[in-house]
Image (cartoon, rainbow, N blue to C red; front, side):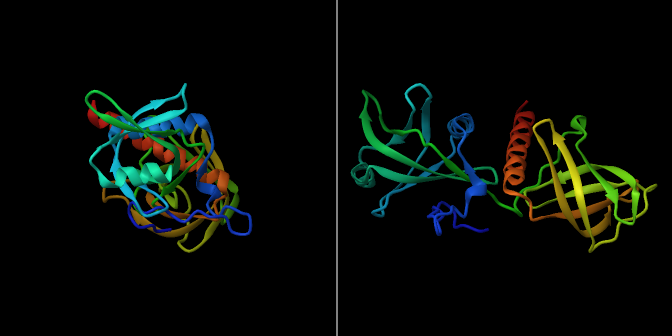
Length: 254
């Protein structure tokens, strides 16, 4: 699923159904966390009004009690008055490989002694689009995430394979040397993933390739794709990827 950078995705309902429901975030706590991360990272936010007005800004503050957000505003920007007149806009921003999209309403310009701010009502929902091929995360070693399955050729053999990396579209697993090989091209059903206490789900895997990790390493890497991952499981996986990305960023700064 590819979207033009900074351009809002068309999220209109089709026959009364939201085709992007799997990417929708309704939980208030999660919305606040994402807004705060945009604020803390100073990530650019692109506002687009229905009439065509657009403006780049950043989130200055998140008022949880008042259910409002404040964004930077340049009073001389000719697009600002058009945004305020429209009283609504679509916001698009990026956190690493995740594209966020949400509506902002009740736009008000607040003038201060030294600066101006564009205030809006806190969004009640967001959409999060993980770029499928853009980013894979490597789980931290101490968490030891695993994928538990039955060997396709030997149903009586249960395997607990280490998860080397994971993305929204697939994963890599470590198959030890002392385990009978798995052939590329086959499917493995009923794989139980235990990535973290908050990220565990059952999936079907399509094994695309079997490769060596490095000459002196034991075992091989299984490159797998998730087959028709359910909406709830995809949301859970997205949250796990986001949290892992955030931990990696914090570790790199320490």
